[in-house]
Image 1 (cartoon, one colour):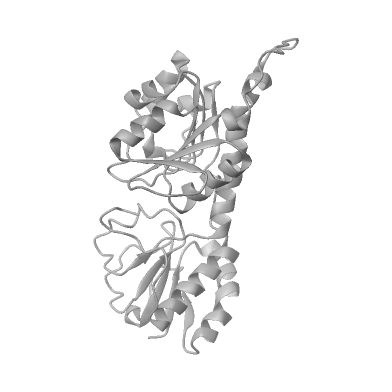
Image 2: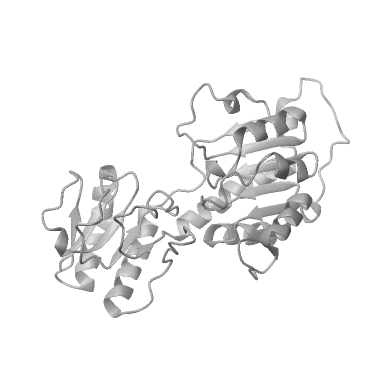
Length: 315
């Protein structure tokens, strides 16, 4: 077995080759990087490791009978975890660039909603409202749905700044600075108290439409939503209705059910919605290379692989 198969976007092949070719041979001299840009592999039985991205050419994993690990280049795995041909272990991408980029995005937009910046940006000339003073960060209740590698990191950064942060996850978590909730009752409690809700859950059958009319109605009047997680977490019609009624004051949305978001979608024209183009956080190859090399080294040495996906949970 000699192959590490790159099955990502062809535009990034040269970048990954420059970052990985020599370090891989240093791990083991016969370990070489192979490009799958044309969608074909001459000897799939010789591939030990696969570097996979959903926007790359690989669809059928069945021929790779000796592959020890599929390392995703993306944090999200919902587009591959259900692939019936995928019988190899699958690891998510968790790297510093993803976490730091997400923290920057969420902090910026939490602060925007916290300071009511959109009100002043849209105010007519001559509007002077000296009484519209925001509370201190410590008095602003921010709820994070999803306390995984990204959500936990983001929540702690917000708490370090001074926000009153609570988080919800499927199972109980213990994270410094974050009041943790879990289970259905915990979700209801967090939703009812959070003035700004940040969605960082994976897409699963259990999380699809987790923000619907009922949950929106539970939120405090004037609450805001930030979604850099997955578009399927929100029932779009219900969110638009809550925005139109004024119950929800604003939404910052980075991910959508259909991408690019169609030009005729109501979100584009809504005065209280900010659309960004799935840019909250992306995998940066220079950071991803460190994760790839670490996990391959772990595999070669028989050590634990980091960030393995639980197929039943879907993430």
